[in-house]
Image (cartoon, rainbow, N blue to C red; front, side):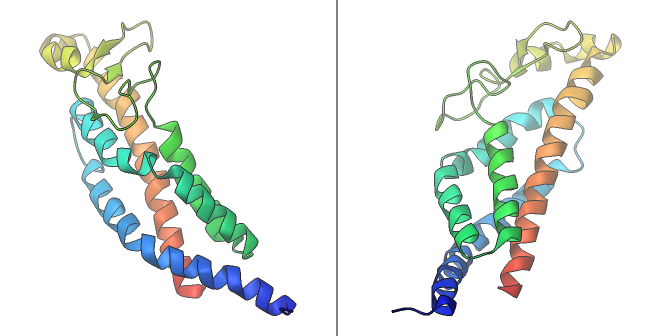
Length: 175
């Protein structure tokens, strides 16, 4: 029969091995997210953001299983970091009634990402917002969509996801 120590160590060793396998991919993703930190056209960048995060959306169930393993191994900090990452990926996802109206697995385009519906603005595709940018800048409407809606959205999710990945990387050194 396994000792209590062995029962605790086995999930911890498995969790470390799984994390070791996925961490390079997460770090590469965090590196790719850096491009969204200092940009001026968030309306156009949101399409790239959705395409970059889409593969992780397809892997959320795998990540949740890893989170459960972290919990069993007593790795609460790692579990919280991975849960924060999953929540951000999920809440920035695809759905017919949100910004990204592509279906899971479909590439985001300027035609299936919709912005607006804020402060009485009409909901329109990124293509429409880009086409009307010049006239919308004159009305200060461009700023509302580009900075206040999309800029905040991207900055929030980039920040959450990068912090979670960083926390997982730091934790990996301690496990």
